Image (cartoon, rainbow, N blue to C red):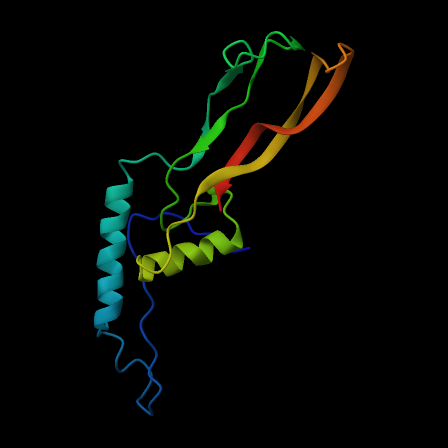
Length: 155
């Protein structure tokens, strides 16, 4: 698993020489593409600081508001939650990012026109039990999987 942590400074490794130069001879020079990458990283981090990171938010679903009160007996509603927020470079460890999302973030960072940023989405969901009337007016107790967001992450 690879994780990225947000730091106050941007640290980039120097490019290695493939020639026969002595070790450390070219380390003081920063290649233009690394300098551009560093500047873009600083700009990206400062602009995303104003936006909320990917996280779980409150959402209560009322079956009455959906017009389902005539066939759902219980519960009257439930806390469903939802995921929303920014999945920006670098992905922090609390964002529950997949390896694919980490790679996608790097590709987006290098060339934003190629691929979008990863999306904030549920990573863990729980079930709810619902008591309702079926088409024959029988009372049914059924467990519905993946109805409550338990955790969010970048995908």
